[in-house]
Image (cartoon, rainbow, N blue to C red; front, side, top):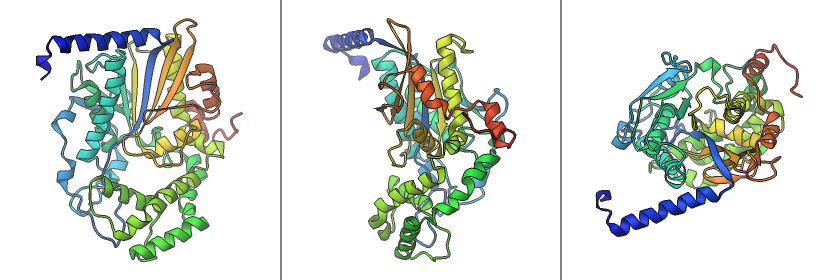
Length: 405
């Protein structure tokens, strides 16, 4: 079909490119850097709701579409062998009904990330020719948590973004579990465990949440002694719905309450009004994002051709990030949700600006004078949460307990 573009097609394409060029030239902001934090795609549940209608999680649900394949490798942050993956090992010690492991990216999830890649391609290659149309390792940095679903999600996004065209192997960088900063790391950070660990269990005892939980357990016919919480219920419910698998009838009636109570739980767990909680959840990640932008503007970035940083993460990464940015909408981030940070430079003044979007919608960050936020204002808005590695690990290990001023 594409080989048959006739004269009219050529004229149409020519005028389209001309209008895009004109649009690019007339905007006062020049794009310099893109950073995308994205949740993995649809997956098998982490646990099934006990004692209810079973869903069949069969291996056929996990087949990779051919158009999502790329030549890729997984390394540690220095380019050495991939670190051990204890979180993934814990998933693979259990089997769901149907024969698959918990927490695995499905065919649907792979397609969702491919589609996100296509959306980014439309914006940064077709509408604004910023990125090279094929994957170039000099331009693109990819980091993922060391879990198969996020690694595969990163690969699928890159396949969609560059349409499987590559001028080099796609390297996906990961860190060892105890040092991971791409999600709130209760196991690697003693202070975070002390601040938040107990709040997971406590969140189910908050009076309104506890009353609804008792009611839903009765409605589902789940033994009251079974451990159940709204986050677990929501996880199984949303996974089933996404894949067209049957839901217990009672759950259909309770659907909106499950959504609301799961978010209420996470809000109780993170308690964003306590600044230190969010600092320990996202501080080092925010520091990396700010450093990347500062290095680009100052010309001190180690790879001057770098234009895109991709971070393959989780819902439990995006929620505290949105809370710290002041734009959390009290809704659970869907599969393949993304927070995108664009760094611009004003063509006349050379001043740097940051624009943040969530699932494609521009966000005005509190503390910023506009959607296009002067970098200095953006840094000040995030300064209360950003933590350099040394300070983060010092706080984690109890070496540095001073509050951040």
